[in-house]
Length: 120
Image (cartoon, rainbow, N blue to C red; front, side, top):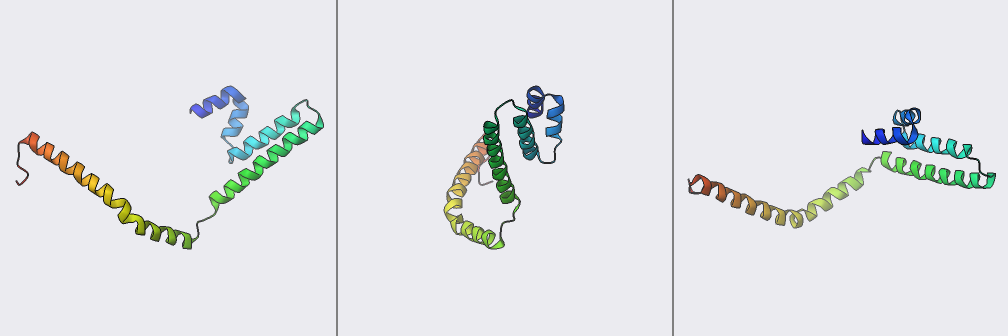
């Protein structure tokens, strides 16, 4: 809600609503930016340079969306799983020892509070 409120303050109610209800917010933001740049009272050369920057942002956005939407190949998934299993003993042994130590400490403290011997 903080994001929506800040958008309403900075952009106005109509523009914020258009951006918030857009199916693709980053693309809508770039379109709004392009419309704003075209409405600026600047010379043509500067407007073209600003438009080139917006096009570069759009290209980067498309690349990120393509990477995000593409599935991970099964070969990479299997390789990662195998590497994870190979590294598992090195990673899990210290954490398992730590958790057992903590458990035994808290179990002993609880038994002491209840004044029960650990054997019973």
